Image (cartoon, rainbow, N blue to C red; front, side, top):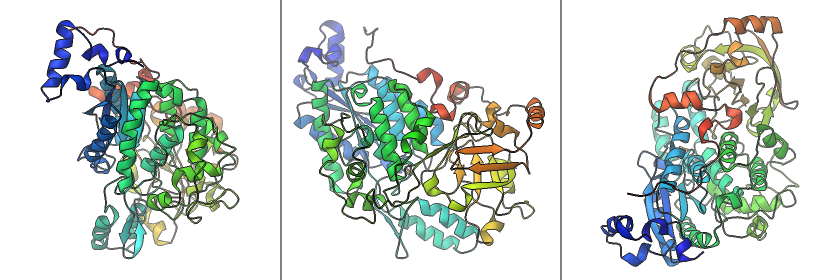
Length: 571
Ligand code: FES
């Protein structure tokens, strides 16, 4: 790289009226000429927002990145993008993942940046930023915000997975509303994202596994000073990446995606990993399909004893050796020559790693569980596939036949789930329709439906549940998710009726609706599409263009990229 080859010089290195305009308005911020002329300009893409509590510390993190950029001879410019706070956004943050990715893509391409640092934290902020950046493909490094410290309640360690347990406890009368209010304050007691291996932590591990971060990024707690150190080093490193012209497409090879899938299996990552990784692969142009997740996960034992599949928390994971220690255990399986953001091969990043606490990170000879991360299920109920997380499921339900209790939509579920007259028992299978990408719209995390109160009262803790929706990465249970095609598009899920027999056989990876073909044909002929299609705005665009879950639920016109060139650029 030399000064004139910098992308930013297409703005700041110009002569005449255009160059004057590009520079003059930067100078109103009190920036001297030499700061942005001839230096790598590094965009810090910030999802800070007080409405995204998991990312509320990102202004401070951005300051650490800036120090690193400046120290390495670059010029940092921070810019905001749409931030998706999982807990507050209605109807679901997933509805806006693709919109946020468009914001990121266009913001990067339209502006004079040579490289980008993506500040990601809460669930959707990671995939949306990576997707958008992939479609531009300039040198990019990711800095995650880090998990919260472990929650403490009545002498116990708690975090987001306990929300589901507390909810069941309140409904069955084992916990009072007052106790629940106390627990609220005990759970989120520091900055950072959810402290279990939920979706945010899974995403942080995903970007480290893909090679998009510096080593150890995934698990350093947000409140740990080493998080700021990593941010500062990342700021330094992105300047070098610009000089080396190390782009996302150089790092995000098919091998990198395969590594991420194997590592995700070993840590028991969220089912949402599937949908986001497929979307990222689509943006960078790597062939990846749903079946790859099962094929590549097969034979990888679960090594991380972390909630929701296990006992411990992200803070423990970091102290036990973090993601590099898991990678080292997978040595021989991983593509160890995959290049990573620091310019080193993956193996160079994990070869010195150690397991400091074998209760938290086990070795491959003594795995925490043999069930791997994700099973891809097929059958006449999900011809394009569905996913289930065996490590979070109940072994007695892995091969199960039961009668369907059908809910036509989420409102129907809420209205009837606790009806004493509901004909449900411990063998029933709960089926929820119309919570897919188009049907809800936005594919919310409602797939791990809470159990009927009358079964909770009997001590039942799990049922087979099937839907075209998603599940929170913090959730658990024998839950079949992402059924594709979805009910709202006329998939077989739409044809299930109360009392139908369904067989789930996880070992055979099959999900079968035991209804004769001629009966299903009649039901199909009588089926009518859902009536909640929107007629304006982004949601209309989304419903018209969103792909099905097995393709990553991106918008069809966003697949691939447009590069970093701006052709019409005169004032
Ligand atoms: Fe943000 Fe869980 S709510 S990571």
